[in-house]
Amino acid sequence: MLKITSLIILTAVLGLTSCSKDPINDLSTEETLVYQTNRDKTVDYKQYKTFSIVDSVLVVENNQSQTALTEVDRALLNRIIINMQSLGYTYVAPSAKPDVGINAAWVTNTQLNVTTQPSYYGGFWGGYGYGYGYPNYYQYYETSESYWLISMVDFKNANTTDKTFNVVWDAQIRGSGIGSTQLVDQMVNSVFSQSDYLKIK
Amino acid sequence: MKNILAAAFLTIAFSAARAQEAPRLYTLPSPFERYTHYLATVRYSGAMPLGSFSDSYIDKFSARNYSVSLEWVLRNSPLSIGGEIGSNYFQKRLPRAIYQNGDETISAVQTRTLTQYPIQVFANYHFLNKTSAVQPYVQLSGGAAIADYTLYYGSLAEQKQKIAPAYGIGMGSKFLFKKDGSVGADVRVKYEGTAFKYGYIEKGTSTINASVGLFYRWW
Image (cartoon, rainbow over all chains, first blue to last red; front, side, top):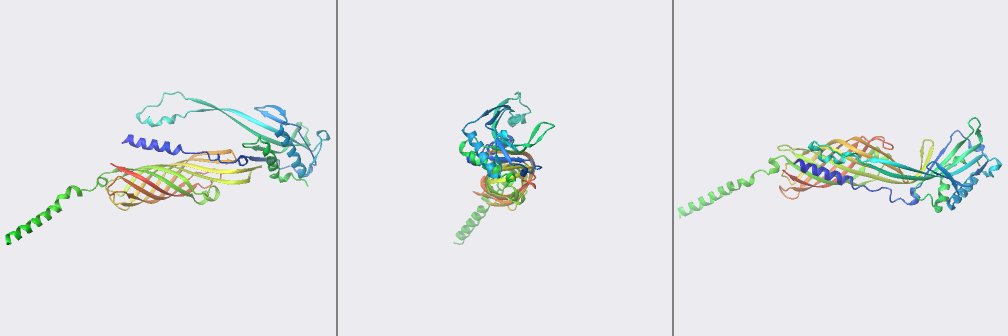
């Protein structure tokens, strides 16, 4: 009897847990995109009039960085300029001492993760008073995530004691398809449109 | 003539008496009445979120719920006791919207999910006896649910897994396919609640489930 009961329970557990499916595999590329923006709430953006932008995108991979200017990078920078201008900022050359500067970066973080096979998978035979003599099996898997990071730096009120510039606004764009040229305009427009406090006119 | 009539009368009377006595073997109560027996049920159910779970997280009907139960139907008692494990899955997709999280503004398509694996013990009270083709019952259950709250912002996930107390109250009926048979159907409506609280779920979950099942009983 105990065997039949155990078998029923085991079958049930396996049956119930094995039929889960990925709830987001039906999302369109556009729907996977997540726009996150952060602001410094103490800042009054109306004090800024001019801005400039980096001439290439900073590519950061696992804390090593270089610059790049591919087609998608150029499209991104141009779209940022258009959005900043429509918010009322005047685009000037970096040498003209802009009030704020815009940085754009493509950040990739790769992580090596480790997991162990949980020992409770073997619980079915536990009733006989024996445990398992296996060592823990370790499994390694690598995950990698890339995102766009756009940040606005305050050049007007530099922190002279620390010699730092404050980041007064930033935007992160994540999801699948973020490297696609077709989605660049939509991505950049979205992060600016959800930050209407940046408007100065 | 009188003798013939008397003989005929006696024959009839005797055979009538025999007819009443002979099937005694077959009028023994069913083994399902005589013994405590086992009953296993597989159920499929539709579930609807209720209350604050519905208001604040998912208000969509779920058709992805299953359970298996094993019960001991007690001899000389209208009660049965047993255990049930199940799987419930709720999901809702929200169109792109803007969410405020502290100082951060997030624009995303939210996919809200909640998976629960309730493991409960239950007691059924049956209103009719075990040979009846229709056996209505009421049920009380209690236990715990392994809950997995996964909230997706686009393709990013926020996940919380927790074991929370769970309970339920239900009513239903068993229907035997054949008199004294081992196989039958089970229909049940049950309110289920858990004390799982996280994120949007601030007051636990509550659902109403309607299930159809098949059972097999043996002794």
